[in-house]
Image (cartoon, rainbow, N blue to C red; front, side, top):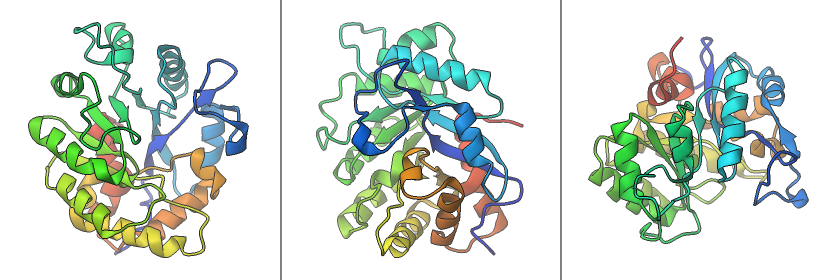
Length: 285
């Protein structure tokens, strides 16, 4: 039994691409120490250092404009096999009731391949009541076989659970386990347990690593809690590259995640490293 990535390879469930010269990224600042442009060719060089092949990667939109979403989709489509599925951000369009996908609706209407939409609201209301069109978004995603990704803080996880309960046909993916670089306290564990009680809630083992001296123990606690509550079949690895490159190179992020996970059988390991992502995002060989 092992938690190492299998020889068959990895599907990275969470990467970002952007080009600040082509479009404005609202949160981008020089102090963050990030490159101005990260394209598919940069990702290919990073993943080439992994101990096993990275067969595909889910490209999550970095900001929230239609132009940037189209840029991301075009670059994903032009670079085979990476990055792969595209997940734009959700930005509501309250004045247009037909636009259940918000900002991304024109992409869907134009037939641009979109695997899901991400609700990124960690600074919003704990009950998600300030998200316009949320139930219409969920119904639209479920009806078209797409996933809802959520970037939320621990206090919002019970609201994610309530949302999943209202939309039992929808697959929900919690980015960074709803915690990211935070501490795995009892409040987070209880909130994650509430979300895990919904059978179609999944989570990404992504965005967890820090440069702190006790990071290995902290991430091991997080990963093992996630396996206990969700099981391997509802977890997927994500590097959060290039954000993670500020902490460690790509190969080290893979290795640190593998060390954090408990030992598991071949089938369970394959689910975490590739199978769950393949199922959720419609990836086929």
